[in-house]
Image (cartoon, one colour):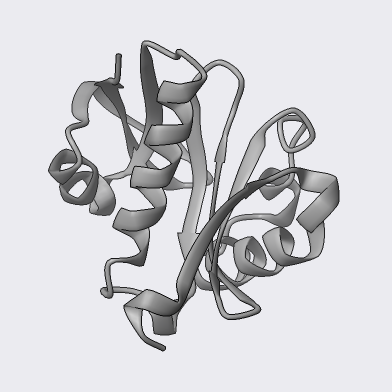
Length: 143
């Protein structure tokens, strides 16, 4: 894989459900032991989804809920630490700006806080747990 071969697209749940589920299953359910019933929710249908593709293989995902929450961001293990997550997040932020969202927010796993801070997010509130994983709210103004 070369960095130039990664293409990022916006999509919908019905259009790419198999690819979206495959990556989220690997990262959240298998690697992080998130209970399957917590992974799939009512927001998948109404959210805009994003896929990073290495040729024809989906390697990273994210979603943007209509209220501006970025979530379910995941990169397959062998594609991490190559800048794909940063490119994916930049794409999502540009998309959100195009929708005239004044700000976006997310629930960051505490281990990912430095990644999001590097992209201009600021922490908010106290640590809380989702799926037994510590998280912190983060916010970024984009317009």
